[in-house]
Length: 424
Image (cartoon, rainbow, N blue to C red; front, side, top):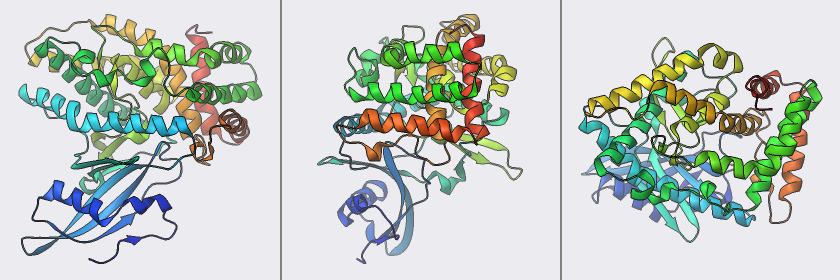
């Protein structure tokens, strides 16, 4: 076999892509008769697209039954770190995502197919690897089916949002079907869906600091802008010191609002396929590292406040919720069951979880909208400098916002809505 090809500047940790690893993936995907001839690592993401893990392309040439073939995979792998808590959380995130792709995701798709609905739209995963602290997930390259990412600095418009909320409604409703058929709560039948951020004590203790410092940076943006004294005080006195407890309590849900959620539903984790007129026609979900058993309205709030503009939310929120509910309801009714909650009850749950949307919106927007891609500087962390690194990142956020109206406007829109809704 020829040596693997690596582009100039490829990170050293890409050395995990050995001949044996690629052979294992190829065998799992194509069968024992597939013979590896060569492979090439081809990066395709930009700085700021990924934070906890690295994502790259793996192009494979192989022989099968005497004929030459090609295969393309997207590989998600952990990056080396000197920070103990990051090493721990990445391991847990890998296990959570592996469990989704190999267990709960396919199970929920079967629930949908049994009632005449299409399976959930997420990438096929032929092989996962975990050994000696190295974690790799090989998944189909959805670009081969025409899927692509939306620009993360642009808020999702109507056409995009409607596709996404309907797919999330199908995800959530399918887990209700599973619970009704098994007569078991989802956290009992799949206990791994009770994740670290729902536990009494956060297993990654320094992430309390990180969560607080990130949202603290958004308060600096509001301070420089002026007119946000109350909301800045609230962030500093409530959000920063109590952020983990607030998020933990909102993630813990009770029936009927307890479903399998995506958990990290912002723009980059949702891919779209477009028609010839550049109109989105199909959506696919990726990145299930934070999938958990929680309220469906956590996903919806997270999506709205991380990936839409304030103007879009004000104009369309009610309609979006109606479309979500009707899609959810159709799945349940087609299975011969009754809905466990009314639209009005769902609206109340959405409003109860809006605080989660505010918080995650501030965190995600302050990270993903930065043009420098340095909003989540994990590569700079060791066990002694967490507060310093993220405090400096927050100060830089405030400086960047001076000349970046997209960044500042999205953050300030959330502060405006916090005030409108009486949060502060």
